[in-house]
Length: 313
Image 1 (cartoon, rainbow, N blue to C red):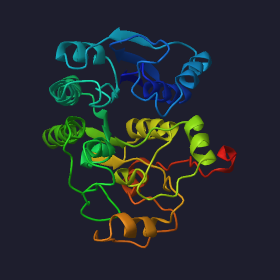
Image 2: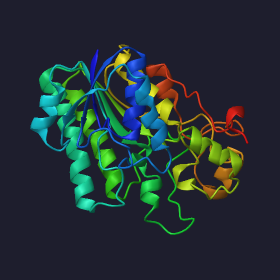
Image 3: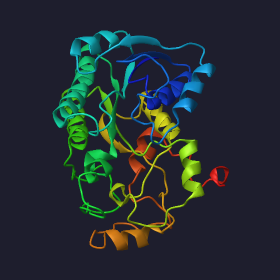
Image 4: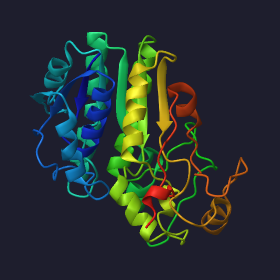
């Protein structure tokens, strides 16, 4: 298949393109910047840009590049013409260095433009880069005081849980998912996956965590102690466009099977979220966000954990 990847010049985009090439797909990269040293990417705090750049040496070719403003519908549909599927990663990466209004308008309009262009071009496979922030996680917590939490409805979180989002990035991700839901309702032939990415760590970051394990359950408790290897994120995206077993719109939580802390999950919940209903018996370090939907519909399971022996000092 020929796949349009928006935001392919970023770190996450590189991992997705790498996975697409491994499965013999053709790739078009639509981004505002060409592939460079990746220092512009919003993922540099958790993934090494140099490692991503090195991937290009294994590619048979660099993807065709179109300079595209994801908020410009004409540019989006023009770049997408002739493609069989789209994986949309381009967005404002956070609310840290942009005005709130710009984050909201850019990220919501990008989801609309991608879905609308796919509808008009009769492209049935669409992947939208969402985030676990859509339900209110670390992005929203950046506005809160130290150790402040706002309890979710229940554990484990799943695709039915409602949002607690407050910040523009998280709200935009939630609204983007609602856009996917709307386009799937009016086009039953479409398969739209909202990928709730989480953490986006690479090998280097795994090694960093393994050298200094975290036991304090208040650390990243607003993100429910979950994380994801960036390569697992890429395989989920590609699995989605290759799968023919489902239609409609689905919100897929994507995270590792375990937590990022050394405190057992039940103990961590009892300390930080003592009043939240727990619907299952958690294994010792089991993540309190369910990935069952992605396992079932996408045949996807995370392969990487920071607890793997190869990452231990």
